[in-house]
Each structure stands twice: as C-alpha cells, then as structure tokens.
Amino acid sequence: MNTFTIEHTPAEIVKVFPKASDLFKKRRIDFCCGGDRPLGTVFTEKDMDEVAILSELNTAYESWSKEDHEVIDWDRVPLSELVDHIVHKHHTYLNEELSPLGQFVTKIFRVHGADHPHLQELHKLYNDFKVDMEAHMVKEENEVFPLIKEYEKNPNQDLAARIHVANGSLEDEHESQGNILKRMREITNDFIPPAGACNSYQITYARLAELESDTFQHVHLENNVLFKRIN
Image (cartoon, rainbow, N blue to C red):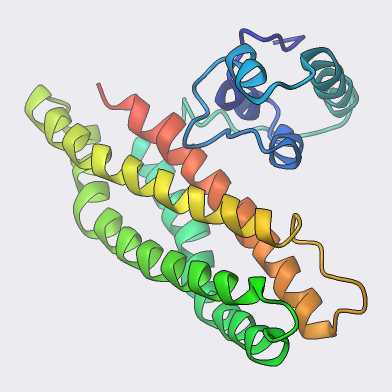
C-alpha cells in the first residue's frame, strides 16, 4: 500500500501504518469499533476536508516508511499467539492500571470538582468503563479465547458459529466502551489539562490519554484482526 485513498478503511490503514492511529484519534476518526468503513464515508458524515486529511496522512506515512520500523502482520500470526499477545499486553496493562488511575480520577474530582464540574461526569464515566472492562476481560479470557484456541487446533463450523455468537456481544461491548472513551476525550478537551492544573491533574489526563490509546489498539486487534479470522 503506497498511497491511502478514500476507499481504504481506517482499520486497513492502521494495520499497515500503526502511527496513523494518532492522526485518527486527533481527528476523532474511529479505527477500531467502526474502523471497517471507507474513509470517504467517514469524511462525508463528519463533513471533513478529505484532501487535507489524506495529504497529512500520506505525508506522515511517506516519512515513516523511510524509517526502520518493524510492523507485525497480525493477519499471519497464529491465533493462539495473537490471543496471548492481547492478554499479556493489553489485559495486563488494564489490570495494572485501572485501579491506580481510578484513584487519581477520584482525587481530582474531590479536590477540583467544585470549580470544574465536568470532573463529576469524568468520575462516573471512568468508573463505568472500569467495571465494564473488567467484566469484559473475564468473559474473554474464560469463555471466548479458549474457544478460539480450540478452533485453531480443530477448525469446524460448529465451533466457528459459537465463537461468532460470543464475538457479537463482545463487539457490542467494545462499541460501548469506545463511546465512553470518546466522551471522556470530549469533556476533557482532548485530555489537555486547564491552565494552572496541579501535578495530579496533569498526571490523570496523561494517563487517561494512554488508557485510550492502549484500549483502541486492543479493540482494533480484536475486532479487525482476531474476530475476522474465524470463518
């Protein structure tokens, strides 16, 4: 893929050019839950300047392509290895981060909520996300991922059908979790702290931005790679 066009989907582009996810987040273009729609459709719906965005995207890709990057073709990685990567990288990150970050979200709400009312909504959104994502990961690790590993060893239509049913609910949950993250970005002004924000405020926003980035990559791998390989 040398040049991206309006016919390409965000999911396709991120597979080839992972750093495109930064541009898509900045432009609020979904590359994970709704990442399988052509850019042209997205640009029309959002009334975006397709020429400017494609130019920015392709210029960045041209520069990036000249550098030495190792891009893993997840479409060719064994399913069990992909599942283990998701668990060990993304699930481990969330299991280690959700509770400590929640303490920061609560702290800035308690200290600054009177002056910054949006922190009350942020506090609720974050805790909704935490509860939903923890239950989601348990379901994946205990129910769905073992089925996928079994399918890799013994592919058959009955097993594929069971996985597709389970994946349908997971993708619905992904969309819900993605919407929470998008709303958090919206009410925090793209995770930019207000002028004069204390260290805790700045740390909270930086870690929320990292949480968003990791979760979108996590969901992208599941929705656009892992689940689509079961047929």
